[in-house]
Structures are given as C-alpha cells and as structure tokens.
Length: 175
Image 1 (cartoon, rainbow, N blue to C red):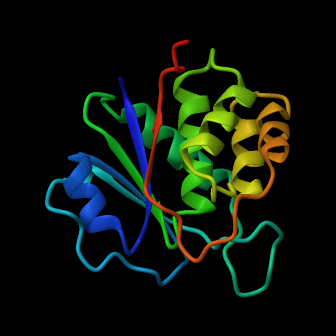
Image 2 (image 1 turned 60 degrees about the vertical axis):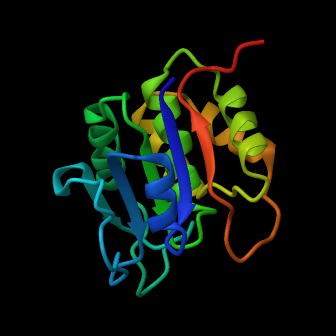
Image 3 (image 1 turned 30 degrees about the horizontal axis):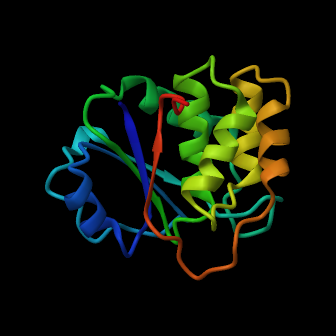
C-alpha cells in the first residue's frame, strides 16, 4: 500500500527515519530552509516549494499559484509509490495536509474527494488544508469544485501549534 506521511519541520528528521521515506516534499515560506535533508532522501527526490501559508494574496507573501500545483503534480507523478512519500511544512497543519490531499486526489483519480477528505480528518484531527492550494489543484485536476467542497465539509481542524505526524494511504480503506 502506497503511503504518504505528513509532519512538521521540527519533526522531519525523526519522521523521515521512522518512515524510511525516499521522496520528500518541502512547503515553506520563501526564506524558510531545511537545515539538513534527511540522509535517506536523494537530492533529486526532494522538491522544495516556496509558498506562504495564506489563502488571500497579501503583500510581502508568496500566494499559491498554478505553477506551484504543476510542480507538485509532476513530483507526485514521478513518485515510485513503493517507498513512502514524506510531505512537510512548518507546522504540519495546512500546506502539507493540502499537498497530501492533492497527492491522493491526483494519483487515485477514482477515489471520491469527500472520502479522501474524511480519511485525512481521521488521520489528523488538526489538518486544515490550505484552501488556495486545494482550489488550484481542484481546477488543474478537473474536479469541478469537489475537492474544495470536500475540504470545506470537514472544516477547520483542532487548534494546535504543531500537528502530529500522520499517514495517509493512497489506496482507499477496505471495509
């Protein structure tokens, strides 16, 4: 079963080690850096997207753009789906959970958007996917607003400073 893991920047080293991930997606504000890429991640399997965690354009910040989504989708398409994929942002709550949701919707196009959103909520009570990233992906994937509606339906996650690491499976859960 293909696994996607999500964590915060602070939990990156231990989560990479525990999951044995071989692909890494970093979503940090411009100027944010990963002090050291985990040793299990090759440079060509680490994508860094510099985007601010905002939903409306704000001066001095980098608002999510269609180009960010194109880069995400290409990275996800190149993932071997054998070794785990690890996604992180600063807190492991918004940008990274949006990216995990987008990955599942992109790579498992037959999965219902609402079911994926409910799986995300079950895996992470604090997940609050960035609505701008989701809306852009919704459009790029031709999901006709269903991805955004599903994220709206699960609502804002529990308040926290940092989300706990979690796993989201690419395949639908079996009954």
